[in-house]
Length: 334
Image (cartoon, one colour):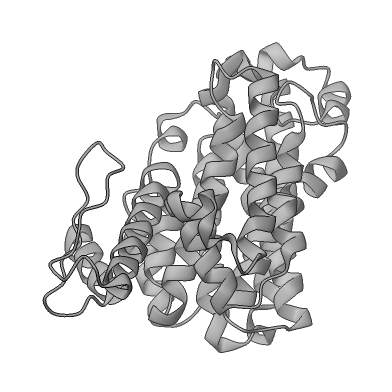
């Protein structure tokens, strides 16, 4: 069923003209020529745009599966731009994540993405490396067709300059980080939808914090000792728990359970605040907030597992998530 939905959405996303075929070779970044006159610049541009859109879609599916499902359910006119923004966010996140990335290399990668934002806003940047990078090419297309705030894009990059081994001092600092990363992306998606509404912005801010905190909690068992756990130091001190105990996350550890509960409660509070604004959010952009469904699902599974991060129900995918998302989308709710 998911494969059928994906194929249907691919046809809606690309809307290729008859006689044109876009093929991506497995395991390569090579672009195939369309079955048209190669001298036709317009046809070549269609080929490039088609490849970039498919590349962004595949990138989000591989590294951000839950948001991939959410983006598939967006209206057709928002889908391509949404995949471009989410793919850009994935690339920025991957620049600093990994077990063998040195700090200097991470800084150079972030510098590349930061400078690329300015390139995408320049009218003559099609002659630069932006044209050769599929994610940047799609981002430039989005910037050229929508009015996006460059500040939000820059926040996606600058927020990740924070060293992964640097612990959060307080829950407030954790919330500020998730607002810069996750909330900024939601605010960009609202701009793609052409909506500038105070209530929608507030909902995006709260939902971004909830989604960000839940995502960081989920990353603790996967990251191990390569990065500091997202549990703030003030929470660890109040319960007398070390970071090592959080990483080990053994069952029946009351102190660790209390720490995870405090942080998960902060995420749940922001999720409730976002949903309280549901009726005040313009109906045409409510599907942008479908990530609330996945966040709520994880927090509920974590609660049932007694806040054990390594429980099998918390480290695997939610098999019922596609059905939940479709049901919420059907009634235009989040």
